[in-house]
Image (cartoon, rainbow, N blue to C red; front, side):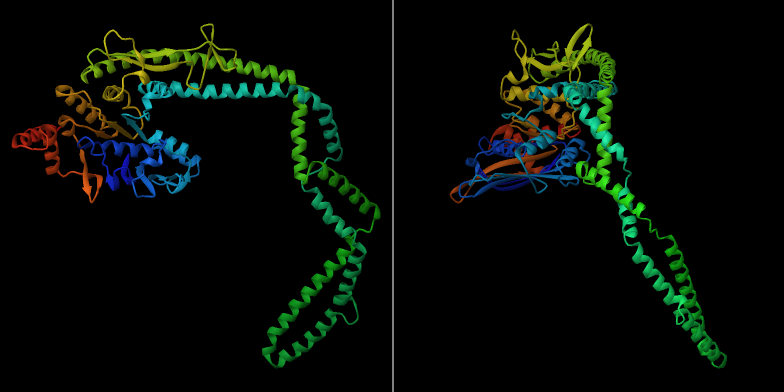
Length: 570
């Protein structure tokens, strides 16, 4: 739902901030006061294009900003995650239209392109009126609405999972067939590379181990000499460190017999002598282990040379060489068994195609049942809204495959398919007797469209997840009892969605959960449009104005009170 709307320097609007509530929000005001400007500004937040002509005279840019609650809106959250936009429980949508032509779009203060604003708008708002931002006028939404109305979600999920596997397998087969010639041509070359790598048979980390060994072998004489010198100095020479410390230790022992303060130092020297002995033992055993064999040194050098050659050709790292070897080995095995692999994949595809075909047929049958129910309910609703002889149709068609691979076999027919099944669905309607039903996008404009949309929403949109529906002058051409029915339909729909509706009719305005008035006043030598939320007293007067005009009479106030209080428990 939308929590607040901020508009600055847009047409007749200097600066307004309006906070909307849940349920039914009604906007009223005199003709020309600026209600349509408000809706046009809202359209910017939904990705509609704008001209610099809308910028208020004397201003450099127009700003429109909406704050939406998106807690629990999985589709919007997924869109934000995909585009790496930080978010919390709110989404701030902002448009700036500049005289310089540097129009900018933001989602949560992150600059984005207009298409992303439009994608977010499609998931947040459905605006009905003199605009094209209407989910029901986008035929691609009809199948989704029909399916949401039906009770076969588990079957749809199973089909979608099967179909994804079907398309994955089909794509894999297509890729293999495209690579067939290339793979076969590369077979001899791959075989040569495999033999070259396998002749060396490198092991992960082997090059580092050899380099470490070589460093020791190439310096073996020096290592032995240094180790012997160190051993002699510590332990074996006549004046070795061990002998000198032993002599000093004896003196300290004598001193300690006289003065016990020397005792700790005796212990320290005993430890030092132990370290010298341990080091001397290591040095003596180390010289015994150092290899002076030139054959072994040459063997390591030759092995490292082979490994470095492989790294140069297939590396740069030895791990990369091994990864490459495994990759080309898979390609070689595929080339060796290509026909078998192709046949196995074709068999798997046909098995998966049959699974999808069975489920697609079941889904199509359920859609036809649901279509009859929707037709009946929507025609009843349209009659209640003043369209006396409506004819509503849910057209369900499918197309024969044109040879593409993504067809399903249903009752012997090869039918085009998608992730939604084999059906193409579009809503048709006729509002006058004797006329053929036409696609929704071709029906009459203005209030009639809005009433058709309201009827459809009343039946279908209870299952739809758009948080906000906006109806612009849904009451055009409506009066009396029908007006109240339109209002009641809005009120009922508002228990499922947040509704913002512009109206001229007191019967509808009296049902408001939140009532706003748009006003046009002179400010200096300029005309300014503004909007404010009405108190209960102001709301009563506004409904009375809708009943009697600017001169509000006691009778009009009484009638307005009856309308409002009569709807209090509705």
